[in-house]
Image (cartoon, rainbow over all chains, first blue to last red; front, side, top):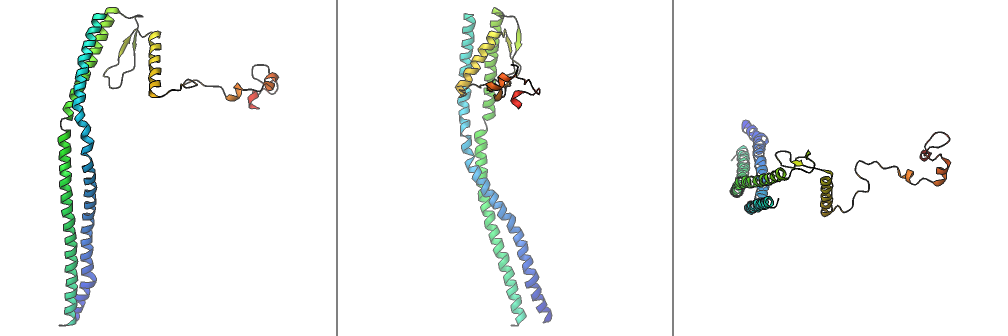
Length: 82
Length: 173
């Protein structure tokens, strides 16, 4: 009977706090991961809007091609004039 | 039932409830993290898809710009070969940003320099630098006291700014 009491005291004083401590140490990183995931999600959702300007690169390329054509015409005209 | 048995049951019950509570909380957190990761994966995939052709387009743009620069350079060279240079001298002006080699300007005379200066001045005005600096860069102006010297003291000196007595400058008195 005395051993049982001792066992009970050990269970309440040692085992349960250790279990809670271990679970707390598992829970803490999980919570941090959740906060990081929330933060990354917030930024990722806003990120594609910054890529909208990339669609204009095609226009830029096309305009530069047109400028090149005009530049060649200008150079030829300058050759004729000079 | 004995008292120790009840205490054991209570202790084990507390431990089980604690473990179950923590495990449930961790499971909920992991589920939320998985949902977030799915969203992140979708966003990253979308960004990758949208930015995929950028490299090729930029290479295309660079090639076109290089071609335009070569066209202009060839035109200038042809003109120089036909007409020569006014002074026959050959000045190298600083390399433009992004240029692969220094630009060679022939016949960079004083007139060309003046024209360049006028162009840069006009560009400054266009940018909003409406006021020209009162003192050109590098020029050291005299102290203000030297410009507004009291006439009484100036009369006491020999005209060259030095005092007749003591050998000290009059503005240091």
